[in-house]
Length: 203
Image (cartoon, rainbow, N blue to C red):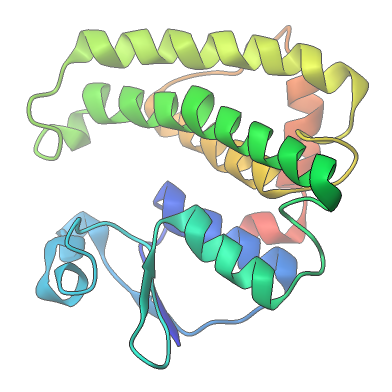
């Protein structure tokens, strides 16, 4: 088994944080995305979308998409449960994972890809107006999240989950995307401080 990893890119990092929370070690194959190595044959023959991470099992089976890879390891190593427990708990984690994915991480990514000068050769065409629109969407969601976090410790309830990992990755990615958490989002800031202080956040 080996994991083709893209360094500080959000989705590869999401898997590494998940594995760190589980205490799982997987051999990494480092891919330099800055040098466009994710477009090389090494990656494209395993994932025609040329995206990372890519998990290759011992029998040659390939799993792509960061959450799918995390789900695979959740099934192999169910404790600690990072996708929730019981019917309700799993539904709540799924709900908040998707909310974090679509309303925060995706918006931050679009802002970064369409505004940051370093992405000019990657995102053709860059549409700065779309980037700015997504910055606003991300901030709007953070204000909603702040209200939700007033009554609970973590994104989906009282237990840390994949939804928190996605939120951590998104907020860390806000810095290069030039987005700030509003100062009045005290609950988001408290939650972010807690999840970013976990040892797994350094993965």
